[in-house]
Image 1 (cartoon, protein in one colour):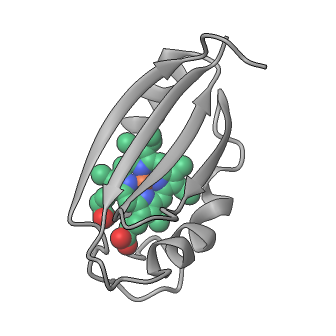
Image 2 (cartoon, rainbow, N blue to C red; image 1 turned 30 degrees about the vertical axis):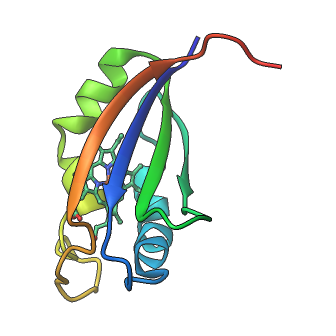
Length: 106
Ligand code: HEM
């Protein structure tokens, strides 16, 4: 049974695909993260302005370890750590963390 952590990020209405571009640029930073099983960034297809980052973890502990690690910074800091990107203002206006487990799959 996987642990599912969803980060719900609300962005300004006119921010276009900027969040998607930033996630694509950081995708590789998750490679080798212990207990990390993958993520999907879901973009709203209606009038909503909240994007969902659906992440899947082997255990709660694996998520907590990542959340408090340097690796989390690597995925989130504004482009330091030798990534070659210049620091940018965050796109998101607010973010909320939701925790789920799988109940039924079809
Ligand atoms: C459930 C796990 C996660 C949590 C709790 C989390 C936390 C956050 C928060 C609070 C923000 C909004 C702050 C901001 O706009 O900078 C954010 C944005 C972001 N996160 Fe995550 N995140 C998670 C998963 C991931 C993963 C797996 C990646 C790697 C691909 C990632 C990469 C990013 C990027 C690129 C942004 C946009 C930053 C920007 O606006 O420039 N996040 N995350």
